[in-house]
Image 1: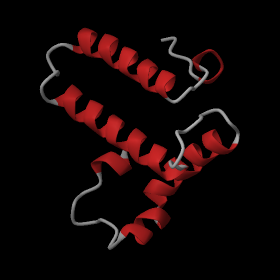
Image 2 (image 1 turned 90 degrees about the horizontal axis):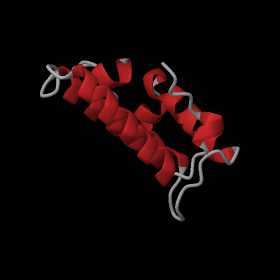
Image 3 (image 1 turned 120 degrees about the horizontal axis):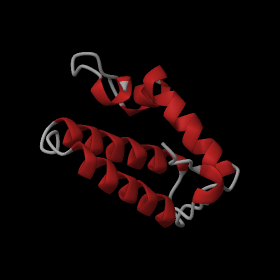
Length: 104
């Protein structure tokens, strides 16, 4: 949540500072573990940091859509976002049977 909703006056000064920011390091560690253990197969030329940004961008976009344009249709939002996250997992060759539990 803090990574997505961080106030604009309290941001890292540069990219290297972002990589060390406690609000970002957890996401980096998470994606690094997925890649290093083989749970996610990235396309050639991509690294775990790219996956971290992809996850951040998708989560931020979904969060903003949910509280703005789609705030009046929560059931539809839940259904479409579940499919989108499953599609993303499929694109990343993530074994959803073992790694993701979408049970409510």
